[in-house]
Image (tube, rainbow, N blue to C red; front, side, top):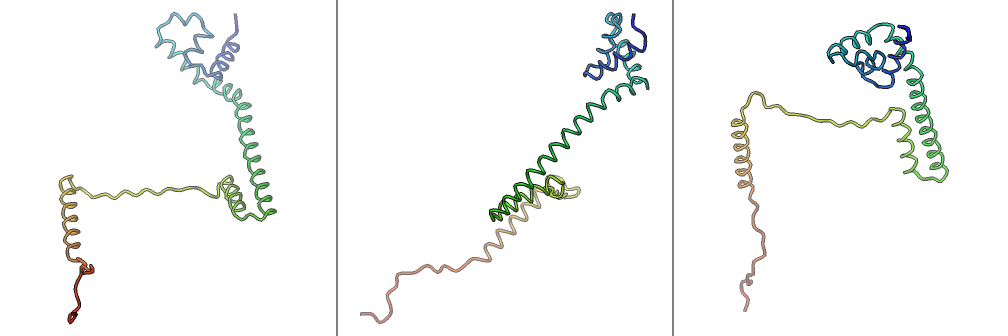
Length: 166
């Protein structure tokens, strides 16, 4: 039979593999498979919250987290190198458009250029939908009245005979 420390080590590894707390508990304590789900959930939760288990899971995760960090850093470094080579090539061949694009890429990779979208919302206070519709109707009527005031004269060519013509 495994010692308590060995069981806790197995529990930590099960959690690291992505198992739920309850499934990990059932895995290392087979007798719990016949228990009510609420009992297993309670025991598994208590065990998972214990400082020893939390510390062990953190230690087991560290190499994985470090590997992911290195992979991300490598990809960023590689992308920066490619952007710099593209900029150098654009300069050599004298292509200003490509130079700008490469410089923009480098700036984006370094977090210097960020696309921002501004959204503004106009609140109309405590107006009811009926009040808003009335206001819209008034605005439309005012616009129509303004259009009628600004009627342009008709400068169409008319077929007229000049005076004094024979």
